[in-house]
Image (tube, rainbow, N blue to C red; front, side, top):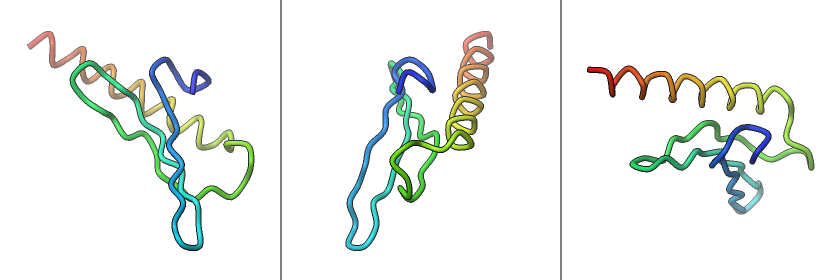
Length: 69
């Protein structure tokens, strides 16, 4: 999902009565789960995109601090 960031993806999982969306970021040594929620609309809600972008930014900042130590 380039609208969230590079190497971000969406996985859709069909359950018995619902479809779930899982947004994740592939890093060189980890997979960061950004958000999980029920798919209710065709288009990803802007609020979900914003949350994912903030979590990705927080992940990247935390990783930078770990490299400095």
